[in-house]
Length: 351
Image 1 (cartoon, helix red, strand yellow):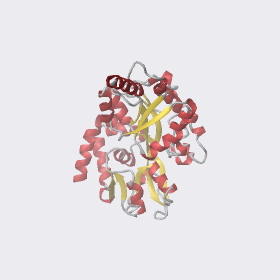
Image 2 (tube, helix red, strand yellow; image 1 turned 180 degrees about the vertical axis):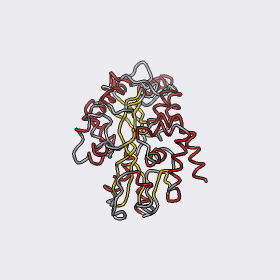
Image 3 (cartoon, helix red, strand yellow; image 1 turned 30 degrees about the vertical axis):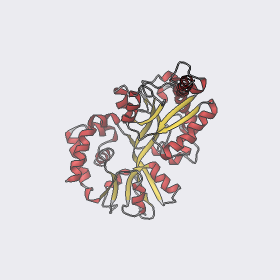
Image 4 (tube, helix red, strand yellow; image 1 turned 135 degrees about the horizontal axis):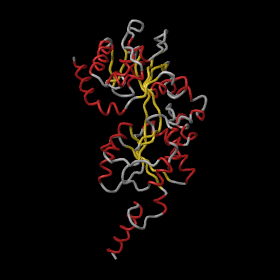
């Protein structure tokens, strides 16, 4: 009897996990998505997870992680992959694709690849949203407002401390743009020793005035404490400070650097059909536009903007008025040159 009970329990456990040949319809109707938590995951839950579950009858299970590729790799190496989709940064998609950790996607099951913004429909990842690296300032402090992110380099017109992320990406691009390099040529110039030297010389001009930040929560804190008169930031952080904390902050969009969050299917995922069903669902332009209602990030579909509520659109990086002068962050460039530039940047900071 004891042996029989153990066998029955083992069979039930196997069925619940979807591991045995007797996999149930219930298990097949569950989709597990691993994301990076916080307000962003909560926004996905409201915009996509819950509506998808309601429409399809598929139960969406959520997990959280820090967004590191090592975690996905460790899951795959167990031989029992418990997640069907993972949210990832663009750089992680490229690395995971090359390493065979993420599956190559069949866009025939998702959407017309040409409808996505450039760089948001990759071989192993589909874009989720567009966020902007922007300039934030306190309207009560700066009565003469900056009009471009590049104004952070203008210490004559805007004296005082300014905040910048303690990382070379974005800062080097803006430095070259402020030094007269057209946005279209930034990465070509930055790929040369002369271009790198030029970018660091421009950063030299404001180095003594910079307060460096590491975490996304710091820019609004620096503004609120009046430690800086302006700061680079992720647009969502400034917008949240305005709406939730009622801070008198404003965003400067001109010359923003736009970046993307992605979603991928890990190698060995069990419910790939459901994963594709979900990817097709969130790639529908009307559905894609819903995320901005819950967090100020724009859709990756070029034809989704018309579906964004009119009161939401001005808050998004992808609003037409905000996309007149911008640079798309080149993840492949940073994948090729990032290690060397981080070392150079850290050495420069220490000087």
